[in-house]
Length: 222
Image (cartoon, helix red, strand yellow):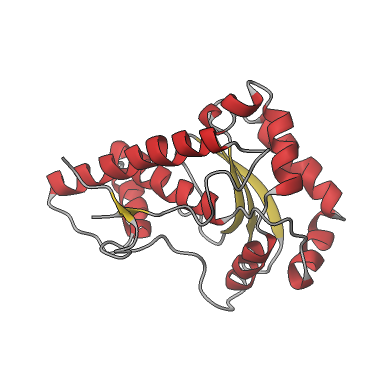
């Protein structure tokens, strides 16, 4: 069974951009439900895959939409938590250089990121990704879709565009949420590690494997 990873920081650590109340609902209810349903589907099918990435890619190929949606949303949320930091950071080194090469500067990246997120119709995610050359791009995906099924792309950061991610704190003002999020919460050191992996230096972030994380909250079928 896959586990619901604990948050890497206290529930109130991302305030005022994301409140303690939102984090409890988002992690303990929404994320937990995706993991629970994923485990139920795998148990019913008699499957015990080693990695969540394997489940997502396999479900995408076979067209199993329900399994894909729950597996991808479990993965997306875990990556979202990992891609944020309560400590204000700035891009450094190769990441800073890549931002300047691809966008001009951090302010231009912010404008492009926020514009993509605001312009995205409906639910989904807005991503900063890198290709194998290290060039940076911004992508948005609908609903549960992510970048795992897009060959040659490695996610560096992501922000959740589903309304449950921001409505309690920002109501329907997605733009204000995205602007505040970009200014305060990106885990740029994490993004730097992801960029290095995109270029073949190290491995990219992976979801805790099936059976890993005895210190994590277990979300099992039943």
